Amino acid sequence: MAAHEQPREDRPPDRGGDDDVDEVTRAVLTASRLLVAVSARSLAAVEDRVTLPQFRLLVVLSTNSNAKLVTLADRLGVNPSTAMRMLDRLIAAGLAEREVNPANRRETVLRVTPEGRRLVDDVTAGRRREIAAIVERLAPEQRTALIDALTAFTVAGGEPPVPGDGSDGYPLGWTSDLPAHHDV
Amino acid sequence: MAAHEQPREDRPPDRGGDDDVDEVTRAVLTASRLLVAVSARSLAAVEDRVTLPQFRLLVVLSTNSNAKLVTLADRLGVNPSTAMRMLDRLIAAGLAEREVNPANRRETVLRVTPEGRRLVDDVTAGRRREIAAIVERLAPEQRTALIDALTAFTVAGGEPPVPGDGSDGYPLGWTSDLPAHHDV
DNA sequence: ATGCAAACGTTGCACAGTCCAAATGTTTGT
DNA sequence: ACAAACATTTGGACTGTGCAACGTTTGCAT
Image (tube, rainbow over all chains, first blue to last red; front, side, top):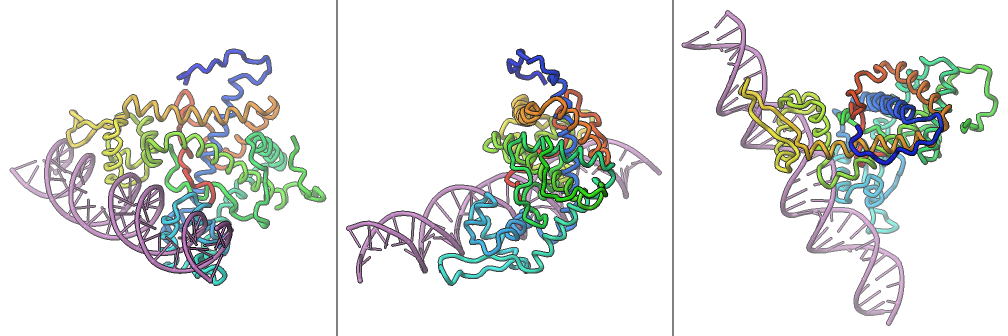
């Protein structure tokens, strides 16, 4: 993997040499695979009811109730027309609702139906349950060590460590998707 | 860095209760988001040359050189016909090659071209570089702690900790995909 | 008040990814 | 020699996706 010799020569005497970094990186990458696998498993349960992009829309809609189309599309990072048609299908499936905003008639108000909400909750709950099951196999000391290590890692990565976390532990962000993906 | 001074009022002597598990789960989920973001960033560089599924195929093809179509489709978890057409496009883009296997003429031999290989290498190298950059911001003790914690977590998750790891630490599995996904 | 520009949702069009089925060509086992 | 098994390929249908165009509704400045 010495494809490009980034002039890394000048290595500080710190005992965290490249080997060290490399090992940690490898550990991170490996753990990532597990996480993705967990995600994929929890998602598998619903993939015959909705497609993955649809589920993603549902999740975003769950945490952004009464959003208008452009907002939603923006959150998803897709074109409004894409969100539009996905919504059409979700609505047809009874998982979402659309309604013209009476206060501003050029907008629409989108909502997830109770059934759609349940679908999302099931998946996110399943994912948390799976991770919790893994965590429970760890000894108490290992758990706190994991928290500390992960928190340090997250902080180093610049992401706000456990920001709001949607109160009672909701989807918030990340994976959930990563359907077949796995590899790559 | 005991950054989890959560107002978790009294750290109950219980050590290992549900609160504990919940906190670890939250930390894991948060770290996951960071990982996904890193992945997405490193992927962004090529998303105007190939689509994500195409890139995924390229990665799998890189690590399974001279594979035949069905094998490839199997690894990707898609229908052979899907792999077929993606390959058509990749070949048209000069990133892959197809050739009838002279030893068994009902099969074809698929290969990634040097250019395709370079594309993949760039992305995977970028991802490792990004993670390494984060890891480098950690103190040596934190690094080893992270390795230990992650290894324990991975083991508890049932995945073989750093199995073969494609020799010199290559893509192997996971994310790489997770394009826009992020949320969900 | 009038009118024009911006914001929205919506629809048309093109194309990638996907699956299922079916057609075609190749090997293999009997 | 033939049928069964296997591999690639093509046809058809549908979702996801972006871009561009259109009609409606607002907001604002003249």
